[in-house]
Length: 355
Image 1: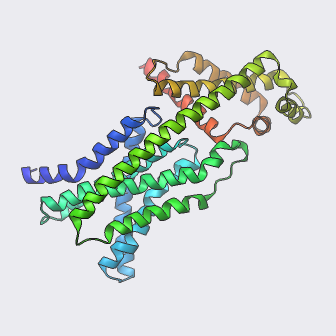
Image 2: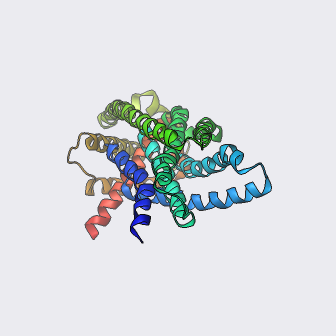
Image 3: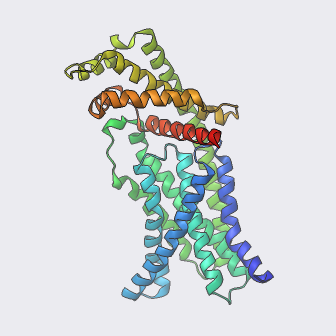
């Protein structure tokens, strides 16, 4: 690789990747491991290839002119493709807070833009350094920011569902339409000014990171407040269970009434399951808050044993009974998300110890 191509490659590819690393450092809760960010970026890169093929097919079938297509056709196809993995993460309850949704979205967009720019580096030989400045600091940042804002708006739209009972959750694709429309509008607006590349690059470079930085800072405070309040509620619930007050509560009576008609189910197993799950969710919240405070705290053998006991109890009780208990206890989608994160951390810790 000659020096000129290397310089162009650095300009075209480095800015959005550096921004992605900066956003990852802003994730003081350590919600998304770097490995997952890399996988999301690779997914975005694969989608860029699909987008290239889709754009080629559509523009051949609808000869509306290249300029009109870049303004109205390409944004629809490309933003829909980039939104797909983020929607999949929401559907699988892998994005619990706005900050990890934003980083996941930016990672997909960054991977998409890197693959796109890498393709153009080797197919457009006549572009000069200023052209790559526009693509590296403008187009690439736009791709990342548009998908990140899609994820942020989608999280805002689905936040009430995340706070509601996980047992009654229903995936609603319509909630993602406002964020998708915003991403398409941003992409289309960017493509409306091909004759003013440097000004539009400057505006993108100023507004996109600033908007995301402010959103992440606001999300950081909201997440900390929410986690602190939720941890306090779970701490009280756990104390009530251990003190024997749970059975006298409305929720406790509802749980026992739900499983009473089922033969072979003991109240002791039900209480043990409720205690373990509440304790593990509380532990997950404590660890996330410890990460925010840069405190030295980690999941280990105690949590692994608790998960083993929880899994054994769930197997003994059966899926139907566990679902009935879950519906009465009202654990939220965020609670389930936190529990899943803790399980992954425990498994990672075990694998590290084994190595």
